[in-house]
Length: 323
Image 1 (cartoon, rainbow, N blue to C red):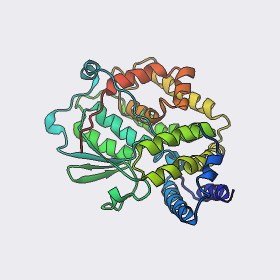
Image 2 (cartoon, rainbow, N blue to C red):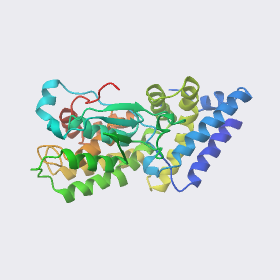
Image 3 (cartoon, rainbow, N blue to C red):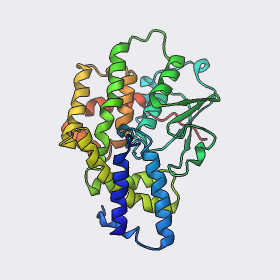
Image 4 (cartoon, helix red, strand yellow):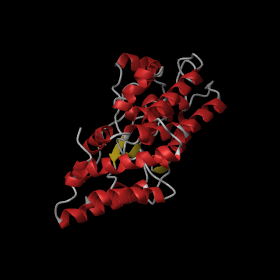
């Protein structure tokens, strides 16, 4: 129970900051995994002090940025050929490396853009505790992209800079409408994610089961993060609900999904016959949760499913190459 108290203290520590970053067992498992030896206790303290330091470095918008998950299954090669935007070879970067957390929705925003424009990229998976893969950089958050030796940070800025280099001269997308909905993604949609994926112990453990299986964790970090991390984020999600005046997290998620569908005004995409950057932003942020319970519930209870399926086809297979 002492360790459960520590989790609550960690939760309070997060809530005391001005910024909070970026799933079937019982909650008591967190206590069982943290009541062994003093040596493990010290390891536990080190792990979560570092983890929550990272979490406290971002706004609540980013509470899931380092902790979310799930790439979507791609479509057939034929669909990809017909859907992707072709970028002339001469406009493509010679080398593009993405430093990421596999589960991060903001990293998935960048990947959706790169996949859609078929820009080959390498991935470096960052350990969210040590961040040793970013020791060369003063900027320690993800995503970080190196484009022909130039460092780019912040998902929206990365996309803006790359789009400026590869976009078609005859683009007909309404820039004001596109910008409005991209801002909506960062300022509103992402706030719906944490309260939903951590809304109960079962879903919190489902989330962390994926996170720890696909992230760059050591065995000790994986065991500790799965149970104690799920417990901590379960409490954090309750605080986020209060902060953003969310009384029913599922209803809020459904409302956001329907708001997006209404914005399409009957078109296949906000960009018309093809996705624009707002389409890619919404898709990228939702992709990590699509096949979790929250994402399945969203598709079953709103009208967003058809658009999402079209986006899967448009984005197609990953442009990732081996590092």
